[in-house]
Length: 427
Image (cartoon, rainbow, N blue to C red; front, top):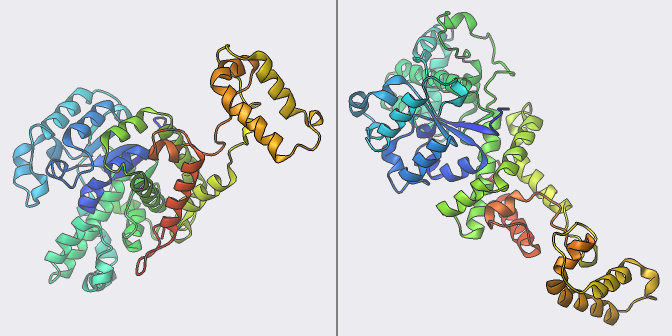
């Protein structure tokens, strides 16, 4: 894992507008690295961040951008591209270009905008297809089946379908994109890639087969091509499924709080203790689950979070007075001392009934506002929730309360209970 917290990579435009809508959640859980984002989509209603918010997080280094030289530095070339989303915007792309120049002398890990080496996926795809001509039939069959072809990332699929009557051309594009995609993830040196749950497993395996991308690498790519898919490839595509699950969990929590798309809520979470806690949680789970098969990862994050919340607890009111030192000193010394000695020494009460217990509770409740400082002086104060706090800090902007524990639990149950005709979110 990186020193800058938990980092992720998204080839964002490959997955369409939904990925741009997911920007706040991707950013909430990680230091986010993006491949050649579209300023046109950032300006649209489909973006979860406004251009101003996006550039602010870029300035802060919470978002990083990777792309080829022409994408980052050549407006005329961008404006000639057939994809409308490539269009240059001086306010957005001009600022990105300026940051790239400002950071050019820094080590790669410290640059906010990084120019990647020229692509080699086209060369690799040609050579790979010569060695594996059966791939033409395999991918052509996938393209002919509507249910299967939708699992190929959007940009690659769009081009391939335009050339469906020229199978070799279509397959070359899929292989070339898979290679470039995998190498870009490795080049960014992130902890995990964002990949949609629906990406075809064959596409993922192609990523694993692609040779690792090194700067100034002029070696023959085919010479480093594995004979079989490498289960220990640098790009662990299975983690992409975990990130998709985490994104949906955050989406559900956002929805349950009615705070979806609120930039102030995101800012508050980014500045608070919840985000580092969430990043550490994701980092530790990714280490734990990194070598499991993709199909075995289904539901892991949801199950882990539900287990942690179920096993955590709120100490009772009496116990809370004994749990933590407090800060200042004012109030009812004798009253609070008597209450504490009474409730902590059962011998002082012979089989207390409900009425006497209720009286003590009432005294505690009424005395605490005045005696709070005193409780701090004596070393007593209410305990807090003993479980993970990040779901509550993300959803409510504050630490856990009993009512909110139930609300979070209900929100998580919704994720685990698929709607009719819909697979579980973590599938």
